[in-house]
Structure formats: structure tokens, C-alpha cells
Length: 446
Image (cartoon, rainbow, N blue to C red; front, side, top):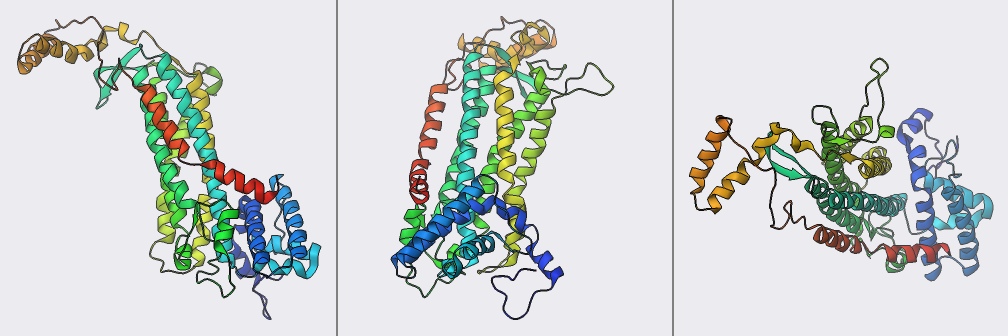
């Protein structure tokens, strides 16, 4: 068994090692390239305060760039007996450069290493989520415009209620994503603060330049208080999970609608044939499995904040090994969320709508409010108009021309899609991804 960074004269029991390391070797592969970036910033700072020589810095940076490239290609591995990604990177440097490789840990702890790794990973993954949300948003807005004149029944209590339209239906989910994006932006800003230099949560006697590593890594600011930087472990993940859960809530509801509306009893929409599955015994089946799985996966993501909360709940300040378990539920969530967004975007782009739903007179009653409002506009007291229309419906005498003339903001005749697009553009601009991109390219020499 390989020696741990922290081992001295006593070697840890093998079963204890297996239990305490858990799934870290697999999960830390998500973090490998970010661990390298954090190390590059840290050693650049160490050289500036005299803890590394200029020539040492250069050879370390060159080796770290090679390790980064291997991680980017998916070739980076954490060897058996090596505890985590931090240990593996340091081992690789020491093998190649000797004692110089042992110098990279001055002024930091694995506690602030994992903190910075998680933040760099999370802000990158959030950027991917934001881009996927934007793609779905654009499809929904386009479909809203395409079908804005096609009416459909609106429901309350799953009973037909009032006229709606596909313009409203698609547009409603688009605007929901705008609010979700606000959550993502808040989560991104909480994430984009630098914990590096907080060490084990109590700072360092070395004269670290934390402002420098903040700038090198493209963070908005640092987590200033070193104790709070460590307290942020789990809090950042929980807040990001709440933002993912907000997106997942929108997707789950939309998926439910799509499953229901595509059933033969509704027949409002038709899913692309290539996006449905069949039955082993029923030749006619075209099952909406993609949206059913989307619904389940998104409901699982909506449970993620509670999982994280229960792991970190009631811990006092300082580091505890409990926090390691958060990685198991947090790191894979982004890929699952992106998969759901990409699948939803593909299907909603190709979905077709039934433009003749209201030809069926079973939906006639949804125009009752239109008739009540018409009578009231002509001078009949509203309650009298309501009673007259109600009695006509009971007597089977109610008719209407199946047209609506709504003009107020956000209604069938005035969707306000341009304003919704403007809102989304404003929120996306607020992320300021370019600052991070410039800093990372400069750090990596690209």
C-alpha cells in the first residue's frame, strides 16, 4: 500500500483505508484538471513571495500543464493506494522532478485544495448548465411564436377551464426558465469566490498573497474569512443544488405535460417517432419514455438539496470527513441535469401540435367566461351574466364562435415573448463568463 501524505511511522489498516477513502478515487477524476489549475495558481503565488525559485516554478508549471492535458483527454488516473487527486498530482510531480515536486503544498491544506477544486469544477459545470438552459429556452420561444395562434384548452383541477394556446404553453415554460436562471446566477456568484489560502480553515503563517490567486483563477473575490471559507464546504454545494432543483422542477412539470398531452385521450401533441419506444407485446405502443425518465431524473435532482443538507446538518465549524460524502451525490448531478436539458430541447424542437383540438364541441364550455365577459361589457351586471351563461350550459344551449380576443400583456393575443427574451438576455449577461475564460487561458498559457 502506498504511503499517505499524512502518514508517519504507523501505516493505516487496509480496511480502514478502504472505508475512509470510499469512492474518492473515482469521484476525484471529475476534479483532476481543476486541482492542477489550483496548483498552478498557488505555486505562481509561492514564487512571488519567495517560497519557490523562478526556475523551480517554470519546471513545475510545465509538468502541471502536461498533467492538465492528460486530465483533459481523460487519461489521468488515480493509482491504487493513492488517496485522492491531490496526492496523485503531487506524486506525479515528485516522480518527475524529485524534491521540487514536494514544495507545492507549502501554505495550503487538502482542505482548501478540495474547496478550490469544487468551486472551479462547479463554476465550469454551471456554465454548461446555463448554455443548455439557453438552448431549451430558445426552442420554447421559437415554438411559442410558431404556434401562438393555435388554441388549446386550459385546465384547473384537471377540468377544462378557459381557452389557452400553444403560444402560452411553450412561452410559460420559457419564462419559467428565466426565473430558474436567476437561481443559477446566484449560485454561480456564491461559487465564484476563492477559498485558496484558507489552508485547514485557520490560515497560514506564510505571507500568502490570496488576492493574487483570486486574480489568477478568475474569481470575483475571495472568501475573506478563513474560517468561513471552510464553513462554505457543503453550503456552496447545497445552494447550487437548489438552483439545479429549480431547473429540474420546470423540466419535470413540462415532461408531465408532454406525456399527458401526447396520450390518445388528449391528443394535443405528437412526439417525434424516433423519440418514443415500443412494447414487447403491444404493436401499437409509442411510449414517451424519454420524458418519463426526464421526470424521474429531475425529481431525483429536486431531492439533492435535502440530501446535501442532511449530510452537513448540525456540523460545527471546521472540517469533518462527513463532507466527503457530499461529492458522491453532487458531482454526477450536473451530467444528469445536462442530459435531461438536451433531451428536452431535442424533443420540444421536433414536437408537433394538433391545430384542431377545439373542433370538438366537448371543449365548448371553455368559452363560457368569454361570453360572460361579453355580456358584462355590453352592460349586464357580471353576476347576472354569470348566471345566464351557467343556466345556458346546464340546458345544453350554450354556443360560442370559438374565438378569443385577449390583448393585455402576457395573454393569448399579447405573449410578450420579446420582453421575456430581453429578461433572459439580461440574466445571462450577468454571469460574466468571459472574465473566467480570460483568466484560465492566461494561467494555462493558451
